Length: 201
Length: 180
Figure 1 (cartoon, rainbow over the protein chains, first blue to last red):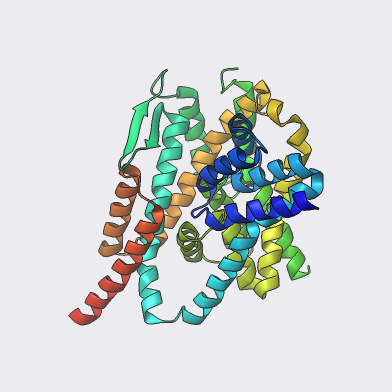
Figure 2 (cartoon, rainbow over the protein chains, first blue to last red):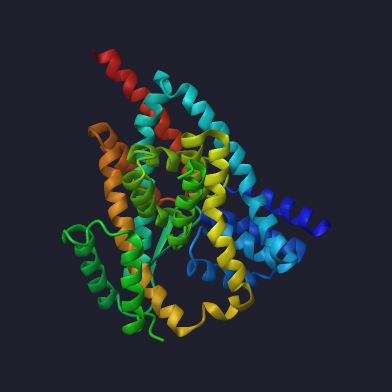
C-alpha cells in the first residue's frame, strides 16, 4: 500500500511543479530518481527515447513506466493519475474563471495580446523541431541565450527533405489526400523510413 | 452516442495518434476537435496553449481537460483527461518489459526517423494555421515576431512572454480606445 501512496505523492509533485509541460518535467524526474533510487539517469534516457517512439505525451509515459516498474499495473495507474491530478484541478478552476470573466474587457484584451504570443512560442518550437529533424543544426539553452551548433555529417538530409516536400504537397495541394487524418501521413512516413533506412541502421 | 463516451473515445484517439507530445498533438487536435467534432475553434486552441504554458502539467492533458470541461462540465473534464492518458497507459505497460530494447530495434529506429518528418509537415501546417488566427493586425504581428525571435534566441521561461503579451494586449487596446 505504502508504495502506491508514495508513487501518487511523488508524481503529484511533478505534475504540480512542472510548468509548461513536456520537457519541463525532466529536471523534477531527475531529482526524483536520485532521491528515491527508483531509476538511474540512464534508465531515464532510455525511457525518453521510448517515449518519443510511442504515442502519447512524454510526461505521462514516464509516469506510467516508472510506476509500473515500482508497483506493477496498479503502480503504473496510480503514478499516472498522480501526475495529472494537480493540473486537472487547476485547469478546471481556470476554465470556470474564464467562463465567468471571458466577457470582461480586460480579459478579452489580454487574449488579444496572448494569441499572437502563443503563436510565436509555437512557431519557435516548430522551427527548432524542423531544424533538428531536417538539418544538422542543433539548439540548446544557454544561461541567457540559446546556443546553436552544427552536429557532424551533412548539413541537410536530402531524403528527409524530399519526403518532407512530398508529404507537404499531399497534405496541402492534392485534393484527394488533403483531408486525410494526420495519422495517414505518419503511417506513410514510417513505411518510407523503414524501406529507405532513414536512421541509417 | 453517449457524450461522455464520445469525449473519452475522441481523446483516446488523440492520445494514441500523437507521437512526441507537446506541439506534435496540435494537428491531431485540429483535425479531431475543431474540424470533425466542432467542440472548439482554432482561436480557443491557441488560448489553451497560452494558458498551458503558465499552468502546471502537460499541455496536451491540460487541453483535454479544457475541452472536456467546456463540453460537459467537471465530469467531462475528468473523462476527457482519462481518455487522453488511457491508451498511453496500456501501450507503455505492454512495452515496459521490452522497453530498453524496443527503441534500439533497427526497424523502430528507421520508422521513427520517417515519422519525425511527417510530424514536421503536420506541425508546420498547424503552426501556419494558428499564426493566421493569432496575427490579425499590425500590433499582433509585432507581438508575434518579437516573441518568435525572443523564444528562438533567448533562454527565458515562456511564462515571461505570456505575461508580457497579456499586459501588452491590455495596453494596446486601451490606447486604441483613447485614440478614438
